[in-house]
Amino acid sequence: MFYTFLTYVVRPILWLVFRPRVVGGENVPADGPLIVASNHLSFIDSFIIPLAVPRPVTYIAKAEYFAGGGPRRNLVRWFLGNLGHVPVQRGAQRAAMGALEQAVEILAAGGAFAIYPEGTRSPDGRLYRGRTGVGWLVLESGARVLPVALEGTERIQPIGASRPRVFGPRPTVRIGAPMDFSQYRDLPPAKARRAVTDEIVDTIQKMSGQEYAAVYNGRADTPS
Image 1 (cartoon, rainbow, N blue to C red):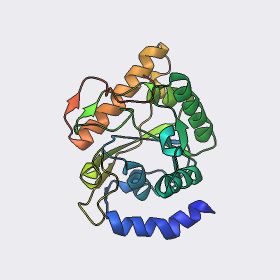
Image 2: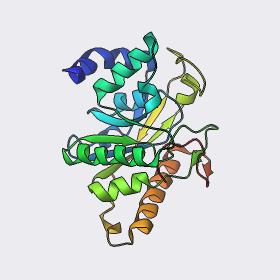
Image 3: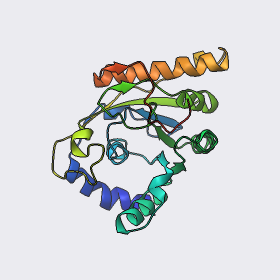
Image 4: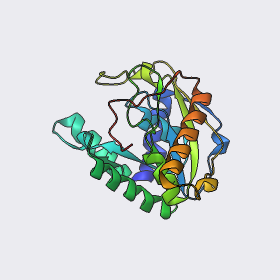
């Protein structure tokens, strides 16, 4: 019911407000388990991607978004909760793995789950080294990965901004062909997770054109 409301009411409004350019929309599988892996530039990325991916997508979301009071916090908590977003504590390894285990359940049911391999938003526009939680999720679930490259969302709502600029710069969403990683299953687990993660991030980098930072983003809140 809520997703139907989003599809026919909220989605058209957000589309008019943000007017994203979508390149490669034909690459999105209509059904089946799917991991949507994207670079991360702005808080609104988790709102822009669902506009470009025409099926329900669940995210890991910082637990802070579900806490606190006030009209804005209540609205965010209601919105994310109804979308089925999975809260995770920043820097808590056990909580992060618990969220990823929930993601496996979502994928096993044929759903789509989105994750930012960098772990959190880039502070300077560069693409940071991927955390291997995404590699673990790929190998555990066997799901294909849909690489997504965002451009311009940081100009709509930079880090620290309390609200997005409506009717501002148009973001671009580039969607690549689904990636299969079954060939990595026979590698040692740690090596396989690293190889999968690096290939995903390399694909995103080629699509986004971002400068690559060969270090972890220190602000990350998902496991490495």
